[in-house]
Image (tube, rainbow, N blue to C red; front, side, top):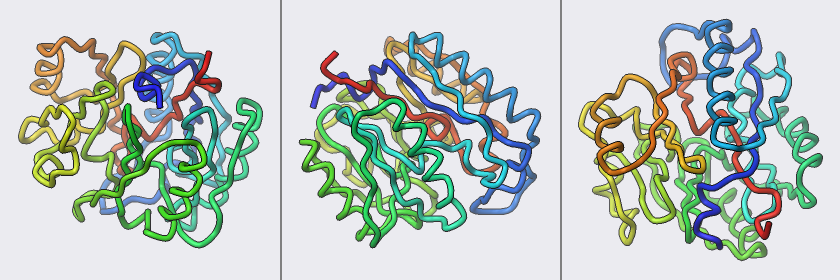
Length: 267
């Protein structure tokens, strides 16, 4: 694996939220997202991705699938290939075919995860040396075993870690800062799953900030977490703060709303 391929990307794919986004699934109770406000946040997100130098494809909304704005869950792009996953929520299965059609336009190799298990992209963290995948309510051992076989053919090591039961996805509690540095909440740090990496611990009380992403030379951080922003800037990272208030109402965040990749990693 090329270590910088974990955060340097030439392309990204996003999908506009539809008016139906108010009916998206969520882990708990709370207010529905406002579709107009969500769209404005999404447009700012796309502009920020483009500002990093990435070529961004914006797909049309899928009104029949309220959660389809979260494009990271039905697919994984790694090592010059796209893998169509099997989301753990049955209502999201219909997102797979439209995503496959979109990625067929970009990648020469698109692989379907075989039946027999479930994997959500939100449980996958690609580092400079391996893929970390957290078992969760949406990702099971059978699905991980199928993914492991595919990644082995691509020359990408996979390691299973445990997702804390109180969070929906593994990446709810962590994000990559560079090839060897991970930002994570205290429970994940204490779990030891990042032993061997440089780890920056999330300030207490700002745990939602852990769902950050590094795109080229920029770290995207959710707005509203001043201690995290100051900490990252002190460590030398260029930080762009973005509002994800509407996505958060559906347990979503910065990583969920884009697939980030380089179609030909040798270029």
